[in-house]
Length: 291
Image (cartoon, rainbow, N blue to C red; front, side, top):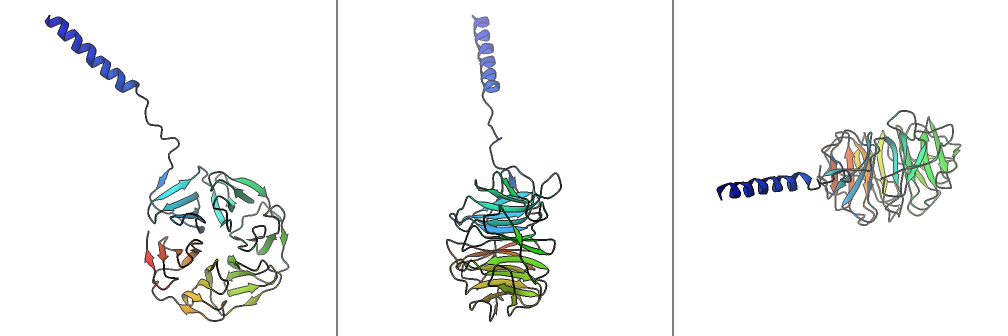
């Protein structure tokens, strides 16, 4: 009888072990990769439909910050997105340029699945281009601008074909557009903020000097602009750039990127040279570091 009990016990132990080892393991292959910190930042955009998601283009792919907290990799590509811009209304569409992880230049490319996969659209002029400054018109999704090798390029068919603007502008750092006027484009340069009313053919200076490293235009009103100048710091204009107010509550380093929350335009994000992310919920009057 004792041998039977021992035998049953051994069989039971073996059965439990078999079930444990044969149970399917958890599949982590489809889980998004979590990223602890930023190594760099080349672009910034708040999700057009979900304000809790902020996209950051980096040297090693596209990241999303969720609820002002964790970073998560979008897709699997580790390419360098030196140029990055979000579609003015479709939250699933992004545009980028830069360098593939294997080397060379990307040209101009598009994603229609929230940045998970990318499709090349064109090489641009004298490309493949590597746009370090790039923007899509808020007023017309077909109009796109990019800065490459000292020249402003523009497209009127969502990046399929490009032409070089006969421009008198130089040393462009950042580009932005009007939410209502398709022909209006702004450029932050090493010689101040510039404005064009004819899609970059000619430019005139606005009342903001110094090196302008970051710029954003309110998606509901072209009267309001936020910019960063090495001479004046973070500033706000409510009269299309004629006068500027210093946003003194921000005391961080040089701002590299600014982005409005389209759903809540009083909310904005910035990334500075120290890779800190700051947020305002009152139109820029007060800023809080969130990462």
